Image (cartoon, rainbow, N blue to C red; front, side, top):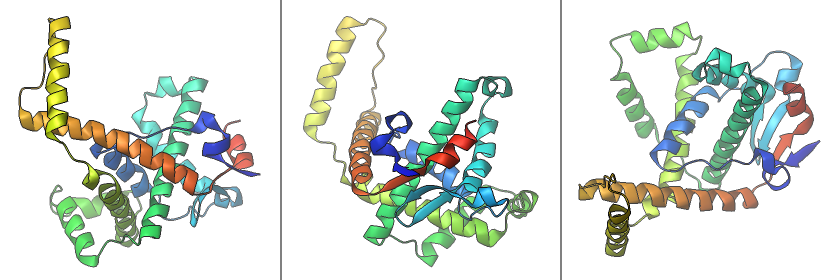
Length: 238
């Protein structure tokens, strides 16, 4: 049976942080999902569906194997930690699929020039031929990686267009910050505030981005049909 995970299963609901942190996380998962995993039949079963976008059981397993490397091995031996890690990834992937659905609705795309520019910038961080060797070592074709990068850029562009570009820091915001800062200093002798005004603006922008992203995501969750294959998910958690 398929069901709306965000409306009917509140245990699985998780809201991402916004801004640069979100873009970074999005990049990690989408860079690993892009082509369905063709293995055993059960791995080809759809696990998550958001509109026209799907993630199979195989897709999830493949990404989770990479995700597990971020945890100490002994920590994942605890059943609750393992399950929480799976739920966290499930929600992360689902939110990214929601953003892709929104991007499709808005007609947001990445041009050839934008893609090539991003590829060149990434390659700059690697010594000559190391990038290509890394792809070979991981059995990833350049064309496959390129298409995944395109998807990641679409998500980033959608977040910028729908969230970050609409954030404004007003004189009233700065005034409120300094007012709250004075109260904090009076009540806490160890308080260390932000001195640089540029840093203050960036901090206020980050907080506003987080709040706006959360509101935006809640609206999209209500707008789109989000389905999780309960049977397949339960089998993965036995």
